[in-house]
Amino acid sequence: MQNNAKKISKMINTKDQEELLRLIADYIDSDVTCAAIGGTAMMFLGYKSTTKDIDLVFGTDGDRNVFIKAIEKLGYSKKSLKFIYNEHQIKDKNKPLLYSRGEERFDLFVKGVFGFEIDLSKIVQRHDFIGKKEITLLVLTKELLILLKSVTNREKDYEDIETIVKIEQNIDWNLIIGLAIQQRKNNSWILIDLEEKMKKLKTVTFIKQECFDKIYNAQRHSSKYTESKLTQNDVDEISEKIDSSVAKKLGLK
Amino acid sequence: MELKEGKYTVERIASDYNLSRQSALNLLSKLRKEGYVQTMGGGKQKRIYTVYKLPKMMQNGFYYIVNKYSKEKLVPQFEHYTYGNYTIEHAIIDGIKIGGTRTKEATKYLFNHVTNWKRLLNLAKKYNLKSKVLDLYADARNTIKCKTMPKRYLK
Image (cartoon, each protein chain N blue to C red):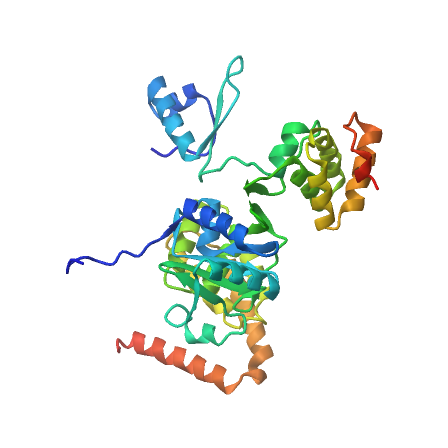
């Protein structure tokens, strides 16, 4: 290899993704239903043309195991969650399983994404991949995608949210906040993550102040509720966050 | 060049975007290939172009089949795309699974286009819908002119 040659990270395009899923449909032992989230869903909805990984949420562990068996036959192997998700996410009970082959990667969740339970009845698209068995892939609404992107919180997730917001003018922020409030018991950071993303998005789009007020009210209410139930780990995490933000303000590294 | 979402004729695009008729046609043709434009009409009718913000694939699932063969048309509840061998028999099963009076009424017309009864009954058994398929078939036989199912499958 030439010294100055750079390693080009391969992205998955729409056609690759469809053909790959069609191929997997020939290798699974029983029919599988799952939902596409993240970049995969954005590709199906036309917001972007390539993605780094294929994110899927399965209804049951059984469905995920059937899918894993099939991709293992195709040469995919299990990978560590380190360097992709943060420590807080790695400890979560709803963490995904990662399988990769070369540069292609599957992030496979069950029922929910880091505590956010997914309702598979609210869909906008259905893709049936019919081989020897059938993979039914459901695509969720744009509002749910934005919320899930703010929960997963990886490097490119904010850019993806920005892409959706720039294209779509009619995003129902009240619905997004409502869903986040519903799920705050399963994921204590959801409102904080969402508010952080919404503040950043103010430079791109107009979001009403009443949306932020709703979040602050919900946060106040939940903090009263959980005040007495904080564990030592939670306290440590909060104090770490506060320390880092204070350090940033003071210009310290 | 970006076009605003909506319905257009060639003349309207030409005047709105200050193009010649031929340039407007070339632009629409390019966008249609990319999936941003769908066309309606042509021939005796005036051709109408629908422009979308995001590329749209041509649907080929349940709603496409039902609206092609059934007298009762349906507004899709979701966009349905299929890859592989999706047949009329699959569409009947999907119609029953989706449910709803209107959907079932529209699905009845698909029995006229069944070519493989064995596949239909096998799919019905797979999803535990055999009795529902037979009920819908009986209903179709009573209300519309409908193909006869071989007797061996009626048991």
